[in-house]
Length: 168
Image (cartoon, rainbow, N blue to C red; front, side):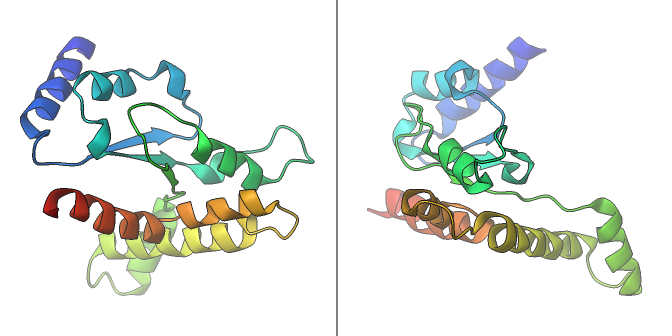
């Protein structure tokens, strides 16, 4: 199964590499140095059109109580891999399915449940950034990482960078 999945990934990259951007999404706990996806992206020569996203930032917990969560997040976003020569972005995009269901029911099950899920993701991420990351005691260097956190920042980055990549 693993070999089949790897072949499918390699084949897809090969077919799309002249007309697509690639989004490497990884969990905040993954070690970049041992990533086979990174190796595949490098071997296919698509580093110039690969964007990196770190997920589940809200699950990071500093091992040292004197270390701010923002420090850990900034550290994760600064990690480098040759397959992504640009800045990594980070998101904490998850929505509790029970809350989504509750909101959908409160709306008399009208509309889209997916819309409720997306709105909740936006709310929880905004709360995470404002109340858990944006810390006055953080260094200016760590605070600068905030511009690389959140779905809105990622969306804006992809809409400009990926668009410019294929229109210039």
